[in-house]
Length: 253
Image 1 (cartoon, rainbow, N blue to C red):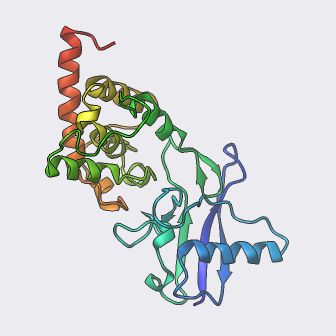
Image 2: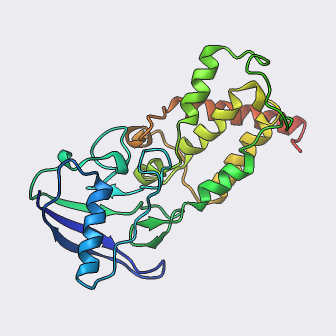
Image 3: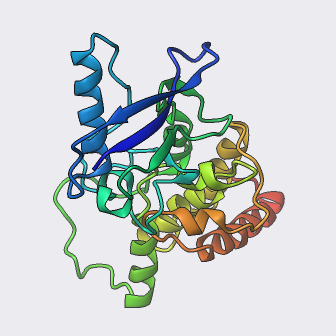
């Protein structure tokens, strides 16, 4: 395949940034999108130019680091697919592909296609824990959990924190991400102890990081590579309202 690439280049957070165009030939349609970018970097280095900076780690759709907007769509045209799992056979020979980083104020560009996603870490740190004894593992049958409850928690736990939901939202809202992280633990009996404190803390941290409000546009669900449902946001709203009422009468410590 021969491709025309229009890629965002930005030397630092303070740099204005711009799109640069590159021609790349002999790209296998069986290669992944990141492997294609590897080829581009090899070509740039061979030409004495600076390689392209982009995030990647597991390349198995698990870590969430391959955060790229491809032709205006976070992670590209294939639904429930991360950038590292996107293959070049989904593009046409001679096609022009535009690649840029997430566009959201709370996730500023560090360099080229790399953005700072540390606000997600701080949201998780504010409430992503449970009160459980340490030491030997508890027997799996010690706390019976209904299958529907376990399935809902596992669906929420599938979130990889990539940030596609924020990049796709016109408000740069992190509600789907936060809802998944809150619901993951709030649905399980092990997370009941901190349920109210967790909900209030994580939503407060999310707001403090500058993310926008949710207006139910639904773009977050559409681009989520793990198919996290908007139902998670509905549950977060219920848990948050309940926690606020309880906190009014008996402040959460």
